[in-house]
Image 1 (spheres, one colour):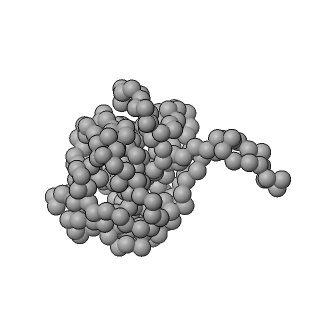
Image 2 (tube, helix red, strand yellow; image 1 turned 60 degrees about the vertical axis):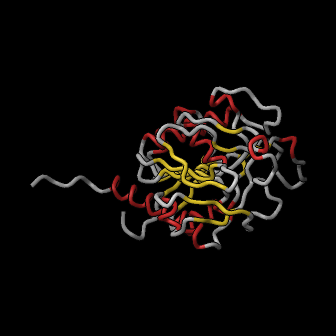
Length: 261
């Protein structure tokens, strides 16, 4: 892969909209269940130098063939994960969930991880990555924090709280700082860490805000919506590092093996 060739990055679509949630228009198609994904994910990946490809939920048996085409995977944000994915009962304040979608995305995350693909996981995606590695979640974060501070009312482009970074982390190295100002739109959060994952960022109330796997070149989850903060160089750098890792992966898998002397 030449320096000017853009790697393909798959992006999950985690937001499901049923036909009853919107009305048909005379000029449009019949209403049906749809998947939705914010354009900000795709724009951030494209701006960093890659080509984003949207991944809808599909039969599990096609995942391996699908991942062969990609140099990286972005696990996007979305609704709550159903606790059946980590062997827990539903909390009374659990939000709307889509267990079938969860099963597909958990399988996709696990197989991308097993292949060593670079993975950037955002908000729900970070929680899903944790569960895919055997971790658990706090289902209703106000039970832990006592308030709704992690669900801001301001637009996603605005930062509302500070997170502290582990100075010995990939994230601190990428952003060049040990603190970040972030946005916050999550109802759930990481509880028990999954196998091989470590927490690398925390809010001032102790909530895990980022995690990484030290056994992978690039396996990073951030709890905030980094795709909305592309105007902040430190957040844009996260997508830049992700795309750089995907480009290196694509180059390594496309180059023919060296001939024996």
